Image 1 (cartoon, rainbow, N blue to C red):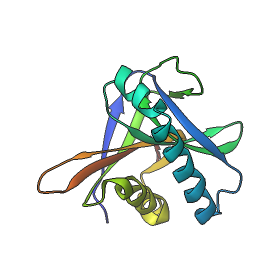
Image 2: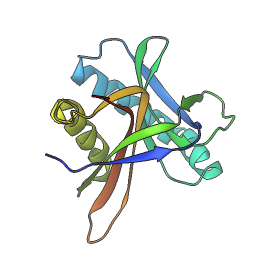
Image 3: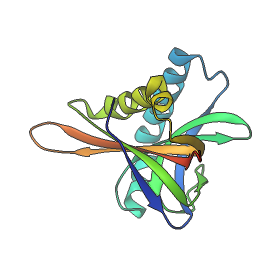
Length: 159
């Protein structure tokens, strides 16, 4: 089983991001294409750089539920007023933290996300994912490797 830890966040926090609604969550190829197109758009028009410049510079890939639809985007920690961006609420509580490493920075967040949702959550029997969202960051490590973490709000299963 993949290693993970539980960390407690004591206060609600916000993230500001640009993203897209995903009409069919099971359309993996279509969702990857929509997400990649949004990332290319906000990179080319400078919106992502603008957001990173006013925050701490750490980019997050964010999955969230907006208006009962799956949503995926890219953003930063904190609340910022940037045209076209949404501010997302993340709640205090216990968070499942899943680390990962790899050599491809652009794919590592998706690799960690895939690992979590393709079976790891089912293997963890003492906590359940309660959302409403999750986030993953990737940063440079050593020797050409990258390090990332996915954070998901969970609730301890009493029993």
